[in-house]
Amino acid sequence: MKVPFATLEHVHGPLREEMKNAFLRVYDKGTFIQGEECSLFENEFAEFCKSEHAVGVASGLDALALALRALGVSKSDEVILPSNTFVATALAVSMIGAKVVLVDPDPLTYNMTAESFEEAITPRTKAVIPVHLYGQAAEIEEIVDVARRYGIRVVEDCAQAHGALYRGKHVGTFGDIGCFSFYPGKNLGALGDGGATITDDEALAERMRELANYGSKVKYHHVEKGMNSRLDELQAALLRVKLRCLDEHIADRQRAAAVYLENIRNDRVTLPVVGSERNHVWHIFAVRCSRRDELKRHLEEAGVGVNCHYPITIADQQAYVEDGLVATPLARRLASEELSLPLYVGMTDDELRYVIDTINEFE
Image (cartoon, rainbow, N blue to C red; front, side, top):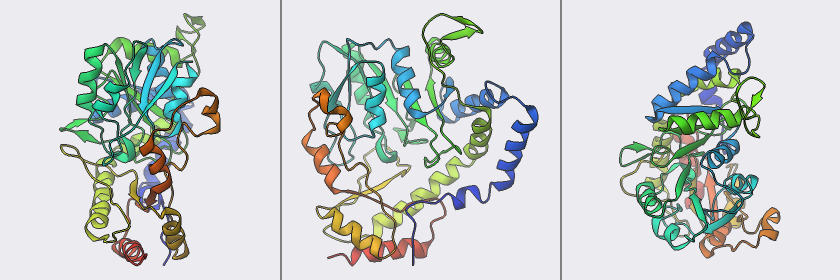
């Protein structure tokens, strides 16, 4: 049997006609930027997240960079983030010229903790970016409490966590701004790049909207040096179709993850842990193994697709060598041990059983 690491077949197949109709609706209207579809999606996504405002942008990276700019983070500032995240989290800080400060995550959930965040605070700390990694919320309420005591702004990186909850509340709604990616492989993915920010602060929403539109509210009047980062009408229309199915898709991913958690029984493999008072939307099912590369070969030779998130820490990336970042101990260990198993909407019981049996056979 062959089991792919991921496939969108079971997401896009049932939605084929609706997606085609959405495409034709945009095609026939002839409005492709800043039209009704984006406005409707922003309203619907904000409602899904239980937030007051959403702003569609061109990518998850742009969402983070725009959020930091809107909050007034500048070149003299430090921004704290977890050491085990995708490079985009750090790039957003670098794009505005601020300094990246890395902290180690919790060894069980792999997310930033309030304790590690507080230990890294200096007089130059302006913002913190907790990442809700793999689809599970960080202890975001505690992180926000620390940030408020020190007057630090909170930008939540929710790129992998659409629909994730902490104490019954959606991620992205605890801090000042929540940032999402709609990269095609995300739990809510476009058919190209896309992203969004959410906030309850109307002034922040309007500032991000202006910054993303060349620093302009009125055409040809540019009050500051902005950028071009708009969610286009086609992607917004397609995302509207998929958003209506997101809860169903999350439930199916949770079903598959529960089968893994119950049936993988190999002492050499460490299973993910779901923290208390939170759900997990399972964008990634990440296991750990001290012989990760051998396990990876074992699975691939059996026809099982796998991936590694992320095999090189931010501090060890060539792009960041000159910044002199310090790779935290757990981040390096995670980089060498993490292996992501197949998990996708529509995964069959036979596929799950085959992956489980293959892992359990690893010696």
